[in-house]
Amino acid sequence: MDGPMPSKSLISSVIYGFLLLSLCNSLKDNAVDGKRAYFHTLKINSLPSPDVCKESSKALNEGSSSLKLVHKFGPCNPHRTSTAPASSFTEILRRDKLRVDSIIQARRSMTLTNSAEHVKSSVPFYSLPVPPNDYIVNVEIGTPKKEVPLIFDTGSDLIWTQCKPCKVCYPKVPVFDPTKSTSFKGLPCSSELCQLYGQGCSSSKCTYKTAYVDNSSSTGIYATETISFNHLRYDFKNILIGCSDQVSGDSDGQSGIMGLNRSPLSFSSQTANIYNNLFSYCIPSNPESTGHLTFGGKVSNDVKFSPISKTSPSSDYDIKMTGISVGGRRLLIDASAFKIASTIDSGTVLTRLPPKAYSTLRSLFREMMKGFPLSHPDIFLDTCYDFSNYSTVAIPSVSVFFEAGVEIDIDVSGIMFQYPGSKVYCLAFAELDDEVSIFGNFQQKTYTVVFDGVKERIGFAPGGCN
Ligand SMILES: *[C@@H]1O[C@H](CO)[C@@H](O)[C@H](O)[C@H]1NC(C)=O
Ligand SMILES: *[C@@H]1O[C@H](CO)[C@@H](O)[C@H](O)[C@H]1NC(C)=O
Image 1 (cartoon, rainbow, N blue to C red):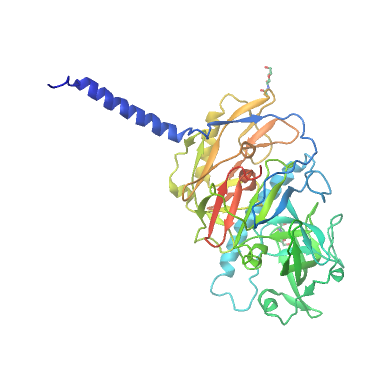
Image 2 (cartoon, protein in one colour; image 1 turned 180 degrees about the horizontal axis):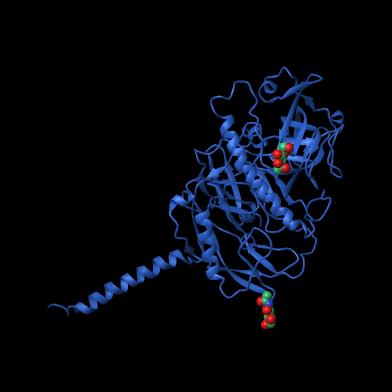
């Protein structure tokens, strides 16, 4: 006996239903997949946050060593010399622009110095990007240990601090006294390292000068010295440092810089064999919280990696951006809009995008924010809103994609930049009039960012500062 045959129309509606279902599923994949949301809730703050430090409780991995990463002007910085006044907002943006310009300029000069005409034995001397101005770590230096606050900077190489006797030192911040340290050894002019990196010889000590593109500089002698982290039982001995008796440029809270770029001089390169050439950091969501800078340790399973671009300057950390989505919708721009790799920089604040990518992001963001009153403060950010009449606003989520399937769903604290002392918030991205893009620290907030020098890759995982 034959059973009843399903009618043609039933078959086609089953097929139709199946197609519809798959269509819905594919739409859903583009939009919300459980943990991801179209919108984030932005709380509109009328009062400044209380000036109290909240410590991150992030447990440290075994075998790793961490430093607290704190905002220079926040309550977690024990050496802060001032709190940033609201008027410094334009100053932050001015310096940020300077840093970005200087990264472009430094890349160009590096390309020049790396070129064939560059003569043997000459110093790999080029201007470094303008030092960043926001996050510091406290390290201990010498024997006995003396704590110094250093700017953490993935864009420069040397680790240096100001030293006595000063010709010109930053006021109100610690000055290291090498005569009081038993582990301090000036680098002899005859040494191989001095042949490689030295710029001269003064009283038989090897001298250096680090010049930054904003004309700030640090001049002094090279030395080898012990560097320690406060929780750690052992010390890093014989680290090549700069001991500077003459500094120029701004400081309101740091004694020097900890360079972490890929060149052999950087602290991360010098300690690479101890830490398996791996370090990571997390930038906190606000200046009242701590993050961390960690050397070594286990990489957790949720870290997604993207390969470091082979075509970028050897000292930068560049990976390839492949797309952006806003409110779960992928921007319709083709890959050629991102043909140059993006620098992952700890010291640039706002993410810079190629013109086509930025304008597409901006129009989609504006479309989704339709109905909120636009505002036009006198700054280079061009998508600002006056949220005076709101206590919370649902803003579209923004995700940035990198090669090899990395997606960064930017934390709500990293999407819009609040104009201090007001309720004006601006989309915290900007266009770069060049074929360089930079993934800035504002958008990196709350993510663990992992720099793996062995496998030449950079990884990201959410929830890094909790
Ligand atoms: C640095 O100094 C040079 C020469 O004096 C000058 O041309 C340049 O504009 C200065 N750069 C900045 C960022 O101030
Ligand atoms: C806030 O609401 C008041 C009253 O409706 C209105 O007059 C004002 O323009 C609104 N302000 C903004 C910035 O939207």
